[in-house]
Image (cartoon, rainbow, N blue to C red):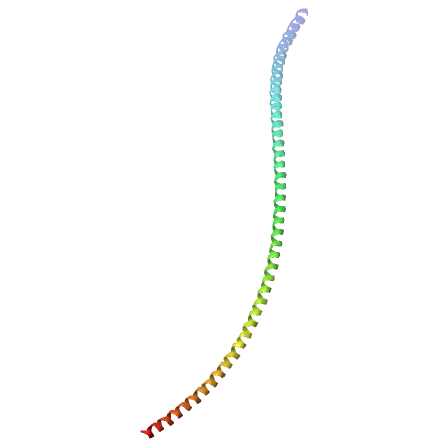
Length: 170
C-alpha cells in the first residue's frame, strides 16, 4: 500500500514537476511578452512625446504665420482704405474742377454769343449802310450818266453846229 502510495506520490510529483516546468515556461513567455509590451509601450510613449513636441512646434509656427498674415491683412486693409479715401478725394476735386471749368466755359460761351450777336448786328447795320450807299452811288452814277449824256449831246450838237458853220465858211 505504501509502495502504491509512494508510486502515486512519485507520479503526482512528476506531474507536479512537469506542470511546474510547463507553468514556469509559460510564466517566462508571459514575462518576455510583458518585457516586449513594456518596450513597445516605451517606444510608443517616446514616439508620442516626440510627435506631440513636433505638433506643438508646428502649431506655434502656424500661430506665428497666422499672426503675420493677420498683421499683413490688417495693413493691406488700412492701405486699401487710405487708397479709396485718396481716390474719393481726388475724384471729388476733379468733379469740382470740372464744374468750375464748365461754369467758366459757359460764361465764355455766353460772352462769345453776345459778341457774335453784336458782330451780326453790326454786320447787318453795315450791310444796310452799304446797300444805302450803293443805292445812293447808283443814283449819283445815274444822275452823272444823265448829266454826261446831256453834256455829250450838247457837245455833239455844238460840234455839229460848228461843223456846219465851218462848212459854210469854206
